[in-house]
Amino acid sequence: MCLFQFDDDPEPEEPDPAGPLYVPVRPGTRAVAVRVFRTPLGIRTAVGFTTVERLTATLGAEQSWTRLSDSVLRSLAEPLGVELLTVDPTLTAPAVTGPRASARAPRTGSAARDVGHEARSA
Image (cartoon, rainbow, N blue to C red; front, side, top):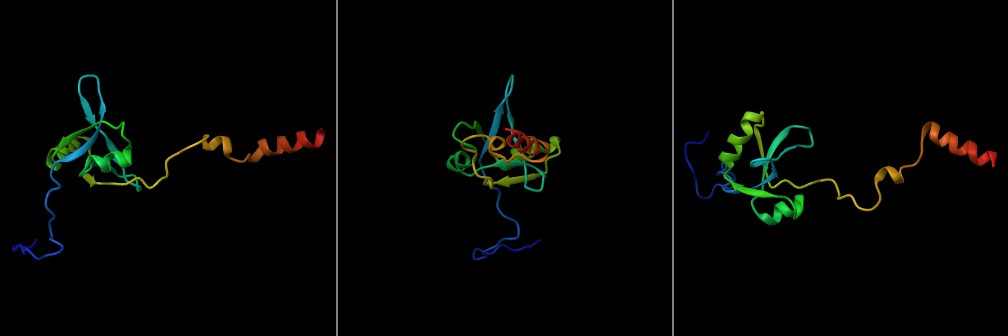
């Protein structure tokens, strides 16, 4: 840990708190609950966004949210065993559009053999 802070330091050793974040929530019966996500490696993480635009670009305009500081978000996630906080994540998978993927998937295994057998019989 650095004992000195320099104004021209491009990479401080300890970044400033993220400040008030836009945190995705889901409705509950009496209150809202903070949504918990997983990283690509499967680690559970609390998520916050620095702007509403980033939240809606990632999760959609219909996603409910609340404003929380990073320390409050961490304290809400900690009893759930969530120690990681991710700020401004982006989804890496493209949005699903059109027919379901299973409808387009080619047939394999016994289903493919059955179709081939029916075609030869006709």
